[in-house]
Length: 134
Image (cartoon, rainbow, N blue to C red; front, side, top):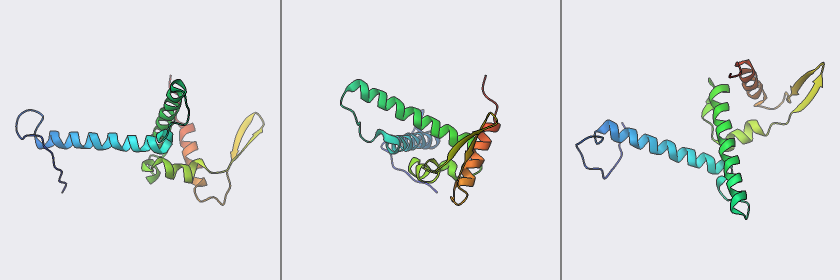
């Protein structure tokens, strides 16, 4: 059972319990996205000029969207789909790897002893198997 307090008067359109719960969940989702953007790099604006900080904000938004799409498409059946950016960075994005080109192919070598290497390899395989849009 879930309870929440509101100062919205009862009755009338958009004031039923289901409508209030929907509004509450949307607000919680928005706050989660703001927290994730702050974890991605939006906590402090690192530059001095307004235009430079606008570019920084655009880069953070792009990074957040790419991360969310990768989680949605590549990690469909793993709990990593709901990991926060900090956990993703520590476990997947910081894995050391080596790119090698052989026979006109590029191969990514991941360390076998890394605990999350298998998950990253599976995610990359899942993304590569998807058809390109267009």
